[in-house]
Image (cartoon, rainbow, N blue to C red; front, side, top):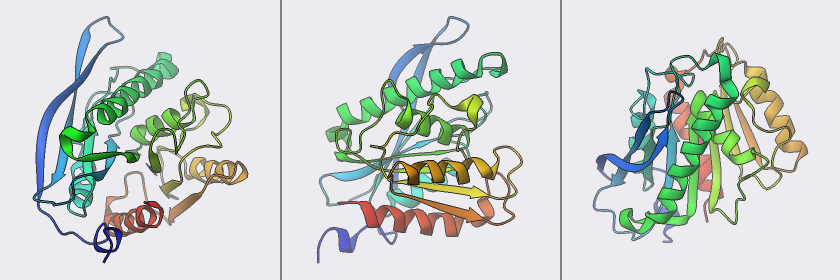
Amino acid sequence: MTEKSSRYLTPAWNVRVVEDVVFGQARTVDGQIETLRLDVYLPEDDPQPLRPAILWFHGGGFRPGNDKRQVYIPQFANAFASRGYVGIAPDYRVRADPEPDMAGAVRDAVADARMAFNWVRAHSHDYGIDPNRLVLAGGSAGGMTVLNLCHEASQPLDRRRDGVFAILDMWGSPDRPYRLFDRVNPNSPPTLLIHGTADALVPYQCSYDLSAELTQAGVDNVLLTLPDAPHTPLMHMERIVATMERFLYDRID
């Protein structure tokens, strides 16, 4: 039985969480230095020396009130760590009022996400992570952050060079004010978009349109449409986890 055939599809491990690991510092919009931290979710007693890892970025509209322990982030991180992935849940800079400079708020979040991504690659062996099998995932503002990190024209991600084999975007496909890119990155990793049609905060149309753009650019993508589901549709958690599970399993080496 191969490693892949025995892993990733069913929970098999208890999960140990290492909390508040410092991964960097950044200056806030009001000039203060903020220390940025992340939580690490590890499959306990897993004999595999190197595991794929998923970076989970929280939502919250780029405002205070949510952080790396936003309710669904530990749910997803625990679910997938129990299946053999290492989970990484980073914080990033937010603003009390991002509206006057939303592009700046998004750029700060993307810069911090890139810092966390680079930290994971640099410290991969400390946590038994395979740096060539990484996933970027985010919900709402976290999804916007991940997609901007991937597609930003000045530093786009390359699925082979950067070791990212998938992106998971949960109800966070960015509309124009939240986009740092004009065109999608044709070297983007395969992307799963998850969105409810009754989302009143981030329109479902944004994911529908982004899926079409990715398809036009030749990027492998899947859009999971949740009929009549609102923003952050946790009532569909079982279906969402099952869809993510299969999407990743079909694309991991």
